[in-house]
Length: 259
Image (cartoon, rainbow, N blue to C red; front, side, top):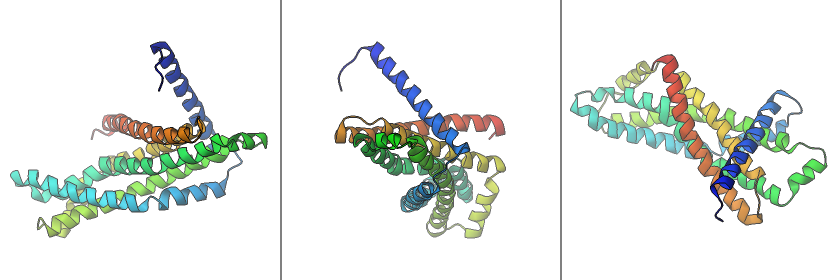
């Protein structure tokens, strides 16, 4: 990467933020107007949602297992090992479920979007779409945006469920807790505010994953090497955005609901 002056560097980054904002705004506005490419939307739902099921289920399940195992050690010092279900349920639903699912989907699909659209960009297929009168943002970006937001919501619910189940398996088999007591405590630990917080985050994370992945794909330059760079940048930037937005959403939700 060539060295540039701080002024040029700042201008490049501001221009990149501007281009990203325009692309994301254009794709979001397309949600409320026709035509809608339903075949592309269903294809992306299948690829993003069902294709991500194995990694999301494995991540959620073993995160719940480890969470129960580690938390039990600390809770045992206070004689509160029966509260393991409370801790696992709250941690998975409010924080770990949405964030880990978002990061897993980002690693799998943001890179896929960037490489797929980037390949179309360097082979001038996107220019050909414009020449034929087709809006590339409506055709390529908006279906991915809809599919990612929709499927990430349900993938997060699944991750929360298998995470609590993984914690139950460890609690019953290794810690000797009563399964009925574990699930009862898990249920009692969750309030309406916790569910809302846990299910609001995937909507924002899905928007970030799709918009960032498509942005780097649409702005790919430099042939096959550029596709590789765009793929790497898409994963890194979307993951960082997810972590930052997670903090901001958590702070906002705590301010609204008080927990």
